Every structure is written in C-alpha cells, then in structure tokens.
Amino acid sequence: MPPTTYAGLVNEVINIVNLAIPALFGFLFLYFMWKMIDTWILHAGDPNQIDDGKKYAMAAVVVFVLAIITYGLIRLIRNSLFGV
Image (cartoon, rainbow, N blue to C red):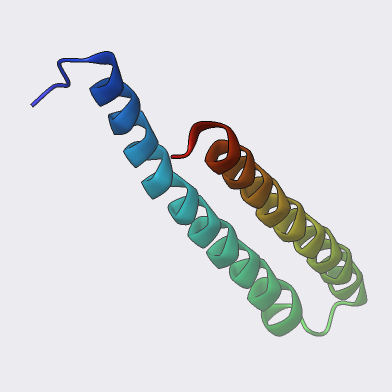
C-alpha cells in the first residue's frame, strides 16, 4: 500500500535505506574476499598480482573504515537532530 502522508513516505524511504546499507556492506565484503582469493590463492605465483593484492587490501580496509565512520556519523546526526 503506498503511503498516504509525507511522514509515511519518509518512513518508507528510511526503511529502504536501512535495508540497502547493510546489503551494500555485505556486497563490499564479498567483493573484497573474492579479490583476496583471486589475488593470493589463484595467482599465488605471480609477484605482480601479490603486490596488487597488498595494495588492494590496504585500500579496502581504508574504504571499510571510512564507510563505517560515515554510517556512524549519519546515524548520530539523525538521532541527535530528528530523534529517529
């Protein structure tokens, strides 16, 4: 049933975002794991691939940390200002 009020619409959008963010984190984690398996297990004999894997791992850790910090800040601001 479509929302009939503005508050209902906002609530629906918030529910969709609350489902999408964990799904995005899960997708990023699975992609990270695949790249690590591909780099360090499937191409273990290639030194260039191993170096690329180290760079990728460092970049992935930085991205995960920044994503978690951003998500936490958004929730903090949302809870502080809107009480949602």
